[in-house]
Length: 112
Image (cartoon, rainbow, N blue to C red):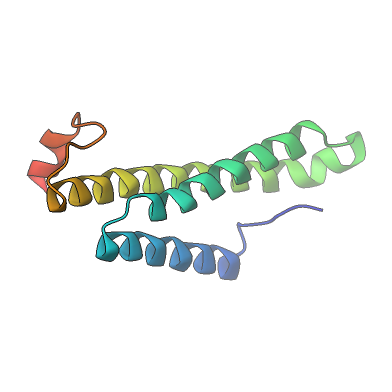
């Protein structure tokens, strides 16, 4: 069984869920909330990679392109949710007047 996230409806629902987690984390100023989406997409990319590696010869022709497309979408969503985590972490550290975990992206946040 393959988890196909390249279908438009599934992709739309995952995008909406990710955006809602990001804005929820922003509103309550808790960076671990967008980290849930990041962990979910990391698990999905691992699952899709394992499925791609374990394809039988008869399924290889049919499902290779599908799984590569799903891995690509996973990587894009990992990128988005990672920057969302860093963004919410920066907002929370300024609100609570704590030092952020990593201030290496200060130049980026100053431009936004």
